[in-house]
Amino acid sequence: MRVIGAMVVSGCGSAVGADYRRRKGHACQLLQMICQFLQLRGEMDAKKPPQCYKKFKQDEIMPYTDLIAPARAYSTRGRQGTGNALPNLTVLQTTEVSEFDAVVYKPVVCLVLQGAKVTTIGDQSVTLRAGSALIVSHDLPVETKIVSASEAEPYLALIVSLELGVLRSLYEQIGSVSDELTSLRSLSSGPAAPAVIETIGRYLALMTSSLEAEVLGPSILREIHFRLLMSPIGGMLRSLLSIDSHASRVARAIVQIRRDFRKSLSIPDLAQLAGMSQSSFHGHFKQVTGTTPLQYQKDLRMIAARDLLRTGRHSVASAGFDVGYESPTHFSRDYQRKFGTAPSKERPAVAEPA
Image (cartoon, rainbow, N blue to C red):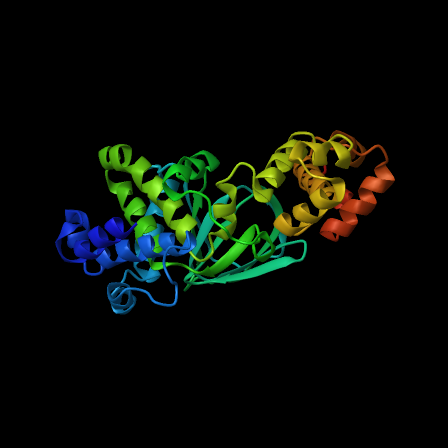
């Protein structure tokens, strides 16, 4: 590790690649990421960073506000059907605040550029404001609410879908880490790390060239995964690197619940799949997701039922039956508790014949 460290320190002067020499601070930004890596491995004292690391903290970095214009341009190109659709990247833009809405999040990072949004699952709730990022490490049924948006300053966020396969492919380079699961959450938020902002910005810039998107896109996406792993809010992602971690075991159970959410839930079977005792599985599941396995399944059922009802092709009873309920009364009661409205009111109104 001393050899690597020496190479990197010399890199602040001359050994780093040309791309890092073009912009102020990039060489030291590279050093920052490697220092974080060494600190996670316990091979560097986090309280005594190198002088170049300290200098990086004072250097000019890309502010998140630099991404507002290109994010809007990408959103406009998408609506008009022009430009390149970059894999794994979505821009969310709205001028109106919203009520709480229940959705299922897949693993993503959300970088908020304007406005504010609240995301909740179980006992976990985070408020995202401009300049903050949210990492969702597992498939989660959440409730979201946009609390700040206007015509003058719309809510604007960049969302990058994460791939477990890409994360796991970094294991050979990063190795195992020692984050305590008790301090980790599947909703992890905080100020967006400068390296994350810069890397997402470079990926967003590929929208102007299909050739560059094809050639450079996969490597930049991989770098985004790495930057998130090494960021202060990447603890749960780091836990997922090991296929035998509690986070990975819970993830296996989540896959099973999502696939069979219409069926009766068997906690003993899920615990066996996760390789845990029933009590240990229940505790770790709630630690990771913020909710219990039964509530997780119920939330999936409610979201699926609402989607069915809104098509107008299902009665209340048939929608409930389709998502696994045997009793329409039980279904209606759970639906009312979840959404605050009767399921019959979700069905589109039928126009009266002329």
